[in-house]
Image 1 (cartoon, rainbow, N blue to C red):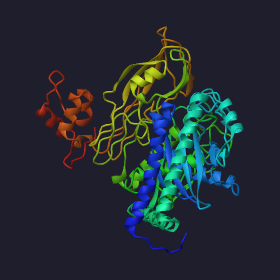
Image 2: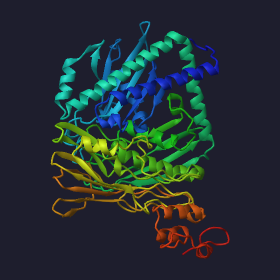
Image 3: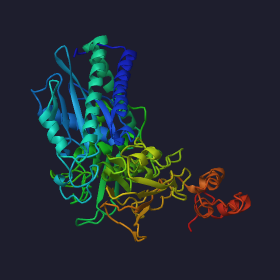
Image 4: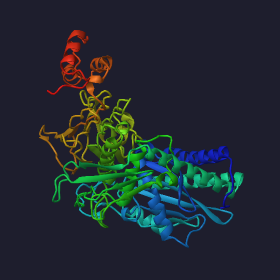
Length: 593
């Protein structure tokens, strides 16, 4: 790189935008060429570009928690193959203790050479339909160690200097139940990195290495300055928060907690998790890479959304996570729920701490991970293997100042980026029949801006070939999505299994469920927490929710002080004015009740 090379800011922006466009093109290629609906419909993957110094310079964060860990993964790959990197190599990694999140999210990286020099790394990372082990679609609620969760892939080469590594491919596919899907999605990732490589070589041919390097330096410096400016706007101090898991099923603590001290010091921030509970013998533990990525999720979802996530914007952020705890488990611990359950706890604690520091940044909490997780098996009707995510059971997001929460949105690990599949395609691919898929009334936390709504999702299993991962999520008042700045919490969620015999089974801990034909899973997800005093919400907005069937007349009166006639759906304005006057003091705040 030419030191001090001046570059026009417009050209630098054009080059930075082109790099991001390349990552989107890689993602589009994956959507078109993937075999599993986890990639093709749910978009459970990310794409990124790193320079020769392993600095992330561009990305597309379809699932943000996956993206935030990619710097750790590419560093692990580059370190392992130091001195043994050739043009045409394609590397793979999924080991949680070598820079990855968890086993199902497989990293595929390709070095990019120009004029014989290594200049970039292109990377894709996505959730695979199968990684072996004793669970389903990458999740094993019964695992006590990482070895029970699936195959650990340390840095290895899928292709050596462009040559197919038959021994490695054969070994990998022999260790999974769904090799057809796994092989297709891996080749989909490989192809996306090849597309990224070609586009980067075209960029270098057009502008030259020195100009591109100068543009990167300017872009990274600008992103860092934007983050530091945002942090200076938050009052200095230490802000503390604690959030606990739903029932984990095993271990000395039924509902372990993440404890956070958020330190704002001028233009820098530290996430300090000292005091967090010890790791548990269940799949909830987080790796350091996943914890750092979750902290990035929390911060970048709270500040200016136009700030690019790259090496520069990450520089002001430090993460302290003691080893042997929930947020930095020791080598060998099970971790496959870390991108969902633990990510949620970390983000919740960070949001609550940020709300103390700057209420305008506060967010009502979201519904946690899906109660109905993933299912996989062999669809006897089609004779084909399947692996699907039951995103039909998604809940609502929390409200923020000025905006209601989103209805039926994927959890904070993806910040809404993971889509629910098409119901008809879902029923074609899997031996499942959707019976109910509708908003759940009264599921939103009340506020001046209310949370989003959860859903009622019922699915019937039509044969006995399925294995499914289930987990409690927001099942208690302590774990339900809390409100902020006077907003109310959303109600707890619930779920039950209705056996074909008519017997009903509840579950209060993670489990593998192997349904028989005719069994039904009945899920009531919850919504998001509210923001601000509910009685400050416009009467017309409350009335609209009642008329839409989203809010009962009882909850409208109790939480919002709005009286609606149950028979006619008309507003009783006089009763509303009286109720709001009775419950609001002269200072504009609710009286004690």
